[in-house]
Length: 245
Length: 102
Image (tube, rainbow over all chains, first blue to last red):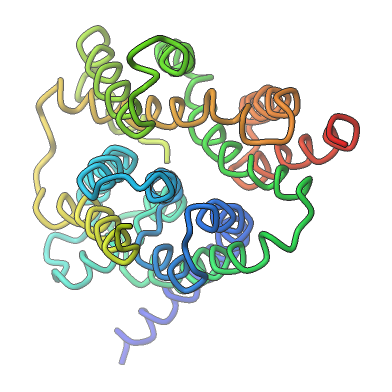
């Protein structure tokens, strides 16, 4: 009996903290839907993709490749690269779950391990109670998937100017993820500047500019991240405080 | 023409596995410094590469795209969260394109 009321309390707390996340997701996924429409997805397919993937950058990259008719392998590799940060977050969160937490809970938490839900979960004290992220997921997943669907349905009803404006939503979100940590770290600031510069060069240089966009992203990510890891290795004791979601 | 549902299944499977594997399998801390550092830098490079130069071609005019990039970096630098930064970038483009795009 006590167990049930505890679950409910954590769930409701998660719902409360999840509402602003869901509203943000709705706006961002709406513009993702506009992109999905360009890639040829139906409203249901967009809903399904967002319901199952729960990944802004990963879906963005995936929809772009679908629109270009890329191979399944290329989509798999790009999704892997674009979502690589979730691997790191999952590693970090694995240290914060009760050791005896059942497999089904671990699978369900992992299903919607996003930047934001990871952020609010890891901010909890002690071991993460699984019903806390479940509460946040209960509002965030509908916000994300319905937003994508409505973006596909209504994206073409909006004037071009509004679509152009919404088109930068995702990039704004990406900037909000990468810029604040860069303020605290000169290494990250330099790495981001180098990424911008090389990414631009890759679109104009002969030969590399002919490569598919997803392949260019993979080459640059693996190359620059490896170089940074060799030049600026991170000591284990500093890793904990740096996992800003 | 490839099947959209297979694309979605591939994306969903990869997205799920990458999040679930460490959570279910790794019970100890990762100690390999190179691997740890590499994983730490990956998200920043990926997102930066996907943002630029794509953002300047995402709008009706290259100038509104550049403005969105500069304004987005500025407000994120000063601590705006995900949602607010996204809204400010949108607003920048919406206002500028009244003048730039006919």
